[in-house]
Length: 311
Image (cartoon, rainbow, N blue to C red):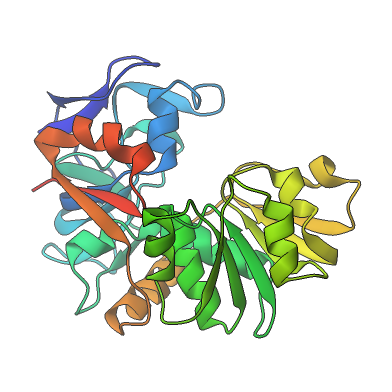
């Protein structure tokens, strides 16, 4: 099969021929229709993940996937050949990823059925970003009437978090560059979103909107300690980039370090919101599998999500 691979790290991803995987006991073999790029794919290619995760070469990149079940491993229940599914590759090593024509995934975690009304293109970009956004908002227990600052709002996680936070009735402050990024963020939801320029005086801009500080921060990009200083006393911060409580011990705030583990319940809830029109998957660019290297090159400058069509 064709797949986006690394022969070593750090190195540039390349499209190559590799063996088609076979499902082991408890696994599904999925024919991938769509997958998407995430920050971990970029980090893996740069060699940043080798210190904390096993790498198996040739390493097939990719976590998000959507497609059709082609075969079942021994003991699989709840799925049948022909089911249309999506989710996140949840394995204890990197190398058997979803940026490929086929992927094997554990049937018991990280996979769910795609409901009617959701395209495989959208489903293939929903898992990692959607689950991270959902878990982050749940960690800070964002409630109606509160104010949240979302740093990194133009990225995939941030774009979904803006929508989910607005749906909770929160006042949303989002960081983005002026121009196209700001237009992208404000177009995510019908609710008012206060966009601040992270390249300017962020503290002054946020204090103008929330003089006493914000109730919660989603730290998806930027200086976490500086963001923590914008919280009111007793505020909460969820960091998807590794910030810990020790990093902000001079502030009266609570830090939640997020490690997203998308289970079927979270995935199904997100997909149902998409099907109902309450949540939009922010896919802004799609590349065929053979042009995946161009997708990687475009990652840093593209807002929202980049998908790869694998079929």
